[in-house]
Length: 272
Image (cartoon, rainbow, N blue to C red; front, top):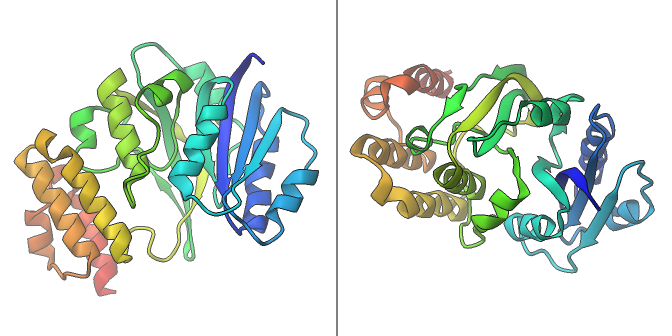
């Protein structure tokens, strides 16, 4: 099969959200794509839905008898992909109808990946996540400036090894770092092309100790390539996510100038 784009989607026990995510795939204006869904051990009727789902585009699904985790499940879909390009979708997020069309039209040689601005959906409403137009490896060493999904060539994502299943967290950030290091800058489309559901702790690294160590292990993986400012900012972010309190002045002292506005927002939210 000669396809332009593969969309991969991993789900587990979130059937209603999965159906909403798939609906956003059905509404794409660009039609030369396939959808691969990996059901990571659901027991809520997801397998039955996928088995009877009727699509007007190439569609495949696989079910893991037991959960193997999102990174390994994504890698399984990446191995199956037949598209020249590939992009992911989380089951609680949604694509804008022109997402694929915009990415296919905007792809150009010399970049590693495309991403876009996003609409963040919170309990308190919606806000737009604006991002730099060009993101270099040295920029990305400060923090994940790209987000949770990218559009890239399937051969690129396979050549760098896909998602690192040894990391307990930050697997997407780690993969973006490897892609940008190997293939060049990331470019951001200055338009919100997806809606991201933000849970109550989504703006923090994580409050889960195991996943928190995952972010620390990701930091260790790239520590040797970081300058002192990048290392300091990572360690500050990790310590804060573990509950260490910082006042505004202390927070700004640990934060590069380019992130002061966002850091002020963190501080303001913490005192409200």
